[in-house]
Structures are given as C-alpha cells and as structure tokens.
Image 1 (cartoon, each protein chain N blue to C red):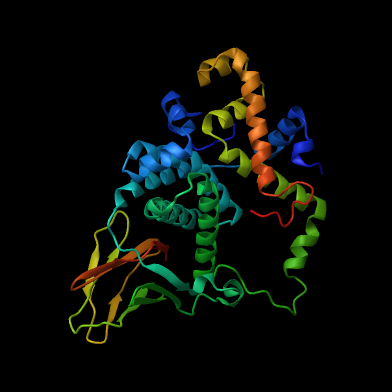
Image 2 (cartoon, rainbow over the protein chains, first blue to last red):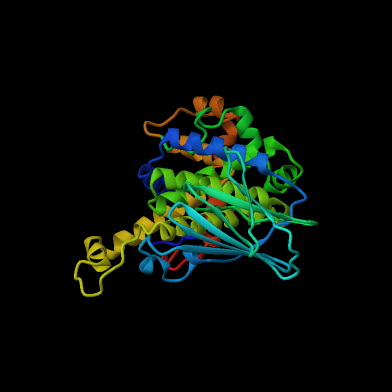
Length: 157
Length: 211
C-alpha cells in the first residue's frame, strides 16, 4: 500500500470514496448525541475542586478477559488528603470517604447525572455511604464536608 | 451520502459552516469563557469523531449514547486545563476509546476466550485475509482523518465524492464559495488530510500506527 504522501490528489480521492462508502451513521442517533453533547455545557463550572481518578478496575489490563459482569467494579478518586472509594455491584453503589484530616461530622455526598435531580446522602460514622437503583450512564459525585467540597470527574457506570 | 453529523442542516447550513471552520485556537478559549455557540461548534466538529471511535468498539446504541455523553461532560470539565487547543482531537480520540473500554469491561460484554477452544479469536482472523484487515484499517484511518478536517473542507470533499457527481454550480451554492475556489480548496483539504494521516504514522505500515 502506498504512503499517503505518495498519493496524487485523484488517487487519494478514490481511496476516500471507498472509505466513505462503507460507513453507516443513523441520523437519529447522531442528533440525539448532538443534543446531549450541547446540553453537557450547562455543567460547566469554574470553581469546583476536581478530584483525580486514581484507579478504575474497568481500565485494568486484562479486565476484559477476566470480567464476568459479576465481580464488583471499583473506582477511586483522590485530591489532597481525601480519597473517595466507590464499589459498584449491579445497580448498587457503596462508597467510602477517607479523609486523613477527618472531623467527626458526616460528609454530604451527591450523586449527579445529566437530566436528573441530584441524589444526596450522608456518610455514616465510618465514612461509608450508599446509593441503590443506580442506572447505567454518566455519573459524578460531589462530597461536601465542613470547609471543603470535592467533585469527581465524570465516569460511565 | 456520508452523514457527518449535521443532521438538522444537511451539510452544515451556512451558520454552522462559519462556526465550525473557526480555528480551535479561537473556539476553545471562547468555550472556556462560557460561550455556548463556541461549544456547539466544537461539538459539531468532533461529534463524528466520537461516533467513529464508538462504532469501532461495536457498542450497543445505548452504551454508545452513554460514552458519547461522558466524553462531552469530561471535555466540559477539561476545557480549563486544555492549554493547547490543537491537542483537542487527540484528547477526544483517547478519551472516547478509554470510555468505550471502561463500558465494555464494566459490563462484562467481552466473553472470556477459552484457550482450549479452537474456535477463538484466530477463527475470526482466519476468515479475513491479512491484506483485507490492513485495508479496512487504512480506510478507518482515512475516515477518522476526514472527521478532523474543518467542516467546510470536509463537506467540500464529501460533495465532490458524491455519486452521481454534484455540479460545481450546486457545490458553489450549497457551500457558499466561488466556483473558482473549489479546485484550490480541494487541493488544500487533501494536503491537510495527508498531514493528519501522516501525523498518525500510518502509511506503509498501517498496523501499530500511533493513534
């Protein structure tokens, strides 16, 4: 096969014609995704403290081969002294807020998703929290305690 | 006709056309400052790229919707950190691929391959000649590169590829460019396309190209 820079304009156009001929894009799907993408902009904020994804078991090497769909998926996020651990089993979600400078007061945890009301719960004395009936799709968490708040990056459940 | 995402205004009506041809160096800072039109222009420009990566991973329609939405949400939160607007296509490609893998893995869609079984991955590969795989990958690379072109240039190439051929007068009217500039714009678009594909290191050896 020729290198791209060795192809003349007409040859490149001929290859393009072949490449383009085999694609299929459902206009309805495209339009639905375009609207969702446009609406994503309403989530823009300038002052949130964003946590980093520390680990996602679904990105582990070999996860595809090992995964049976039964083992829980675990995600963790970190910023400074605070770590947020999430374990997803089916539609249930168990979380833990680990705060090295922990005070005794509970943290408020919001589960956010596009097009839905935030769901809010509080951590128990050990820092655990739980959400049930969580459908697949993009989510993020916002943890608020005393003087700080922390937002995780979006992830697809 | 190859659908490139501008469904509401086939081939991106004039307004879209102007927006999506703005350089990323203009669009990205504008979106960062909260300009919804700039954001929509970025979406129009790269939605086809996101769709292409999703299609490569053969996700269900619903999973594809989820991945697409997550990618755009991630971009909203990433805008502030994106110092080099030209890095955007690469960021979108990588993020979309990662989200596809996460969804595939998290939902256990991929069946484990039994090493004892003869009917594994090899069987699939045997069905398709090696040369065909390379050619298929090459066509995919070309489509991806096409999606990274500014919409005006992409639309011109697509119109020129249409079968039966679209008369130059009509191309001129639909894209709002003089007939005399169709030829030179085609040449520039193809040059840009070569650079995009070359950057990805795919040419003589399509497999293992760095995309």
